Amino acid sequence: MSKHTPEQLQIFLDIATEATLAAGAIVQAYLGKLETVQEKGRPGDLVTEADKHAESVILEVLRRHFPHHSILAEESGQLGDSSAEYLWAIDPLDGTTNYAHQYPCFACSVGLLIDGIPQVGAIFDPFHQELFRAASGIGATRNRLPIKVSQTSELSQSLLVSGFAYDRRETTDNNYAEFCRLTHLTQGVRRSGSAALDLAHVACGRLDGYWERGISPWDIAAGVVLVEEAGGKVTAYDGSPLIIPSGRILATNGKIHYSLSTELGQITPLVSF
Ligand code: IPD
Ligand code: CA
Ligand code: CA
Image (spheres, protein in one colour):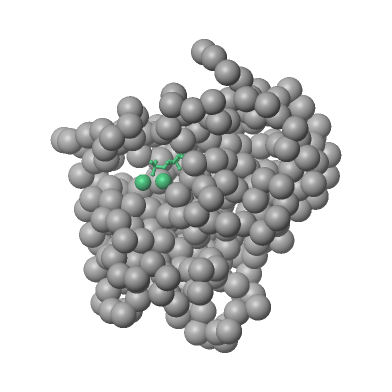
């Protein structure tokens, strides 16, 4: 239950929408025209001029409307107090690897945590022109029409999605074993390369569940609100309350949550490749 009225949350949601749509226009404009693709640190962790330009546009919108709010932005880092009442978590371009290869699966994600809890989220997929929005207690939409999670109740009938963090070559906790085991138990496991879209697609029922480790707050802040408001469930792997800084998330339609959580708790890592 939010301490804010639906009208107040709607204002935050409208500004999140303004920011993500503006970023999406920038991202779409650079598609196929990139001049600089750089690695940020780990192999495969890319940043382009589109990420930076889109982030600057989101920051401009948020600062204009909410000059006293804090922001956690993927490319700029922490701006303001991380424990502030209002913390925007933004990923200007989620799916940069896809984007750099012109694989059309990427999105701009703007979420708002109020007292540490995600309560407002807007995700825009500019290639497919799909806008996903949600705020606590006021529902979730895709292109302004209400969305709901799927009804799939058996893991064996489910279609899942997951991802692999950039540290995957440095740790045996790399999600490879989980991906293999769940591929075996379900109709399939996809790896889209955009956590924000993974959550949006669970919210609108295209996918039944999503899990990932090594994920950052900006990847999931908006998507968590979407899944919850579409009737789904979001927790830690073991079903306990989600702790965003842990980097581990399990998000499902609710019906397969227990089965998926149980499987994730029983898997032992694959040790070598
Ligand atoms: C990545 C994507 C990917 C996930 C990675 C993220 P980026 O974000 O969301 O799906 O598996 O863990 O880092 O780097 O494209 O913004
Ligand atoms: Ca991301
Ligand atoms: Ca990003």
